[in-house]
Each structure stands twice: as structure tokens, then as C-alpha cells.
Image (tube, rainbow, N blue to C red; front, side, top):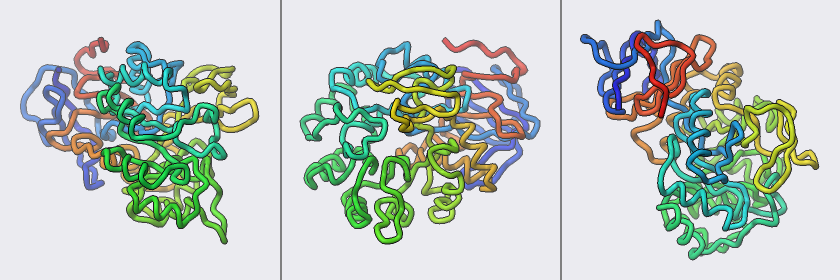
Length: 386
């Protein structure tokens, strides 16, 4: 691993403050924050006061640039990581849709081997309510069992970090079993009531998958799981801020109720993200894109074409403080994943960095100190990633 030197960057610190100073990455990790007095070998970002922030983390991502996580090949995951770097994402959970077990196995086996930027797997589509399947293939839903999870975890080398479930579809013993395995459980694609959602939180579900979407809407007499997610301080919620999945001001509502530590920005991006309008697939289902949205042939939204940098700009445009918005894409998901060395700029943390311009657009991205995407030349040559 090579060094990376950042000079005159406006660094986003873990407490939300900004610090105009230098930063040094050596052998992949941040070793110094503060004035750097001597020259080091390696590329130099002369940020001239631009924001330098932690690499973005997307816990809900199906693919992009034609690469589908369910392809389960090294080439697909390598290509996806390169695509994500352009939008500042340095870590993600490969998120599945409902699919037969045989089609899931290649991804599980590739996850065991590791891949650039891959932080683990998010099983979204297997254990949900078919009545709220959304763009999931209802015919591919599976009954949960401890034996099934054991088989999948063994195949993946314990790479499954996150599972979306509809609690009404699981026996209480199954919920306790999954929570006891150290897997992060998320409530989504569900018809459960407000009261049932609170019981699910008690049972170990501490996150809500794309709140407001593929769930009953908030109703004044039957508030459902949406209210539980918004009010319970134990739970984090994720929002797809693409101007189609929900009204942007719902982020404002969630932020006022839960703060930056309770909200995550996610993309729910599908393999067609970044490609021209046309006909594609999400799992086994045909999808039509128009450059703004992706939909099944019946008109149902099918994931998104969103990138994380775009979601961040939209959130900042709502008037939410930039430091709080950036926390929703960095520190908050890292904390939920129990990753203490990601999502923050701190000595000892991985050198996952994003250089932003004054309009919050990505100028360059580094993963573990290696520049993996740049539209701004460094003062020394940037080698292409192998």
C-alpha cells in the first residue's frame, strides 16, 4: 500500500466539526491528522480548503454500471467497486433480491474470497411478506430456518452481515435465532402493525429497510411500522432520496425526530444504474428504465438509479447541515455495522477518503489510501488500480 498526503483539506471530524489541516495515510491507514512537516512519497491532494470526508458506505446496493451482485463473479464485484468509487462509495453491502438458492450461491462463495469495497452481504429478498414484495420476485421467497442460515453463512465465510425480514412471517424462535447469530436484522417489506414492530425491536430488529417504501403508509389510526421506526431511539432507518421513492421533506421529518445518528442514506441502486434508458433485469424480473426511475412492467418502482453523491447533494439542498448529511452516509452506517475504523477521519482508521468540491461533487476517492478514482490530478502521478 502506498502513502497518500492531503494538504489544506477541510476535514470532517468525528464530532461533526470541520478542521482545516493536513492528513497522512500510510500503509492504508490514517496515521496523522495535522500539519505535515516533511515530504512523503505518494500522491498529494492539495485540497485548497475543499471538504475531505470519510468514504461513503451504502448498506443497500444491488449493482450498477451493468454489474449485478448476483452475478457472483470477481469481475462483476471488481467492476462494481470501480463504478462506486466515482460517487465516493468506498464500502458497501452487496444486497440480494429474492432468488433461488442455487443462484445465490456464486455470490456467497465469492464473498468468502473478498472483493474491493465489499463489507459483507445484505439478504433483502428471501424472508419478506409476499403481499409487500414490491419489486422482489414473490415466487422466489424462502422459509427461514437455522439450517438455511448455517448453510449460507458457511458458504460465505460468515460474510452475511444484514438480513431484511418481515417479522410476521417468522416464528419468534426464528427471530431470536437470527438475532443471536450476530446478524443485523432489518424490518422491511412487511405488513406488521405498530405494536408488532415494537415487539420486533424488542426481539432484536434495530433497523428499518427503506422506510416508507414497500410498507403500509403512516395512517392516523393505524400508524404501522413507519411510526415505530421514526419514534423508537433504538432503531435506525434508511431512506432512498432520489425524488421518486419518497418526498424529500420526509428526510427532514426523520432527521428532526431521529437526528443524524438515526438515519442512513442508501441508494437501493440496481445494475442498470449509470446505463442508458432501456430494458434490463432485477433478479429474474424485467425492468424498464427512463433515465430517472426503474420500474417493473406493472409500474412498480424497482430499486433506483441513484448514486450516493447525488443523494447527499439533495439532502444538503433541503437545508440539513452538511456535516449531519455526511454522517448519514459515513459514521452512522459504520456504527450500525460495528466498524470502528471506517466512516470517520481519525488516526488508526482506514484511509477511505472522498475529496469534494464546493458544490459537494466528488473530485477524488481513495480506498485504504489508494486513489481509485479522480477527476483532479494529484501533484504526483496516480497509478491506475490493478
